[in-house]
Image (cartoon, rainbow, N blue to C red):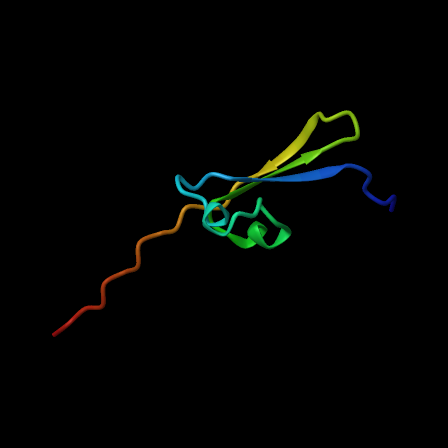
Length: 65
C-alpha cells in the first residue's frame, strides 16, 4: 500500500462557527463535529472525495402506558 500524498481540507458549515468565538481557524479536532465537511485533495488541488456527516435522526419517543 502506498502512503497518501495530498491534503485533507476541513470545512465548517455551521452558521456561527465555534472557532470564531475563540479566534482560531478550523483545527484537526473539528473533524468529529457534525458540521464538518472534509475534502480529500491530491497534490494538484483536485477534489478526490468529499465526506459529509450523516444527518442526525430524531430520537424515538418512549411509549408510556
